[in-house]
Length: 334
Image (cartoon, rainbow, N blue to C red; front, side, top):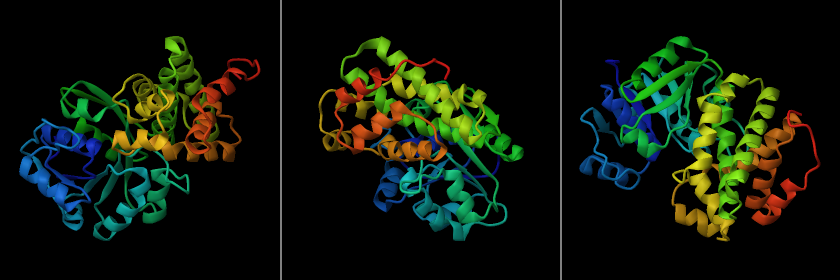
């Protein structure tokens, strides 16, 4: 285990879960969040009652409400920030980086408006000055925090950083693999959010297990098709960060994206469904950005396109399904 501290920036459910996991693995961890009142509550109660109730913080997990101090404590930083706020937090933290800083992120999605991956934002804001890595895979925060067995992937073009971060996380209940396919790992963790909404819609409409299986399979084909155009490796998309994460989020109601789809399929208004979930649903904005990305690369993503239209063009879920079913016959591998 590393004797160096690591700072986790982002105290939502996933950031807190990763901080707990890292601390349970004998790392000294500093957890920062942007709401001072919440951070004071976390420090007092020694749990994140809002997102992960009844899971106590390990002794090696320390709450730090000041961003500059949190960054200054550690050479290794793990950003667990929603995609729409990633750039803002990165820019605010950047003045406190030094020559030993290494940056990882566990954010899944694309920046709203620009459609850029977190890797691209990092490159723009730091001029590639720092080793970088992305962490992704089939992981629900509560299960990770509770110490249930989990596997995930750390991807970086810097093998030393990938191995160091993997060693921080790897242990008796977590299996960690390394990769250098940063694009593939990011892509799998992004598009699956959109497809999970689609899976929820089909189940909300009561279309059965056959439909769900077909949707997951054809959704994977869409991820691979886009990945081929972007230079991702197929074996990455057939691994934990691709099909693994896709299966998880499409089949289990712990997924906020799937729950949004379920609500829409059952006829609930979009605004009410999002309000009741009460946390960021990454797939909502990501659907728009994924469709734009596919158009940029000249790739057809019919499922993602229909999800986008349901979320942003008031298309009914039933009409979206009919649009998919009425598509012309084509080779499965085309």
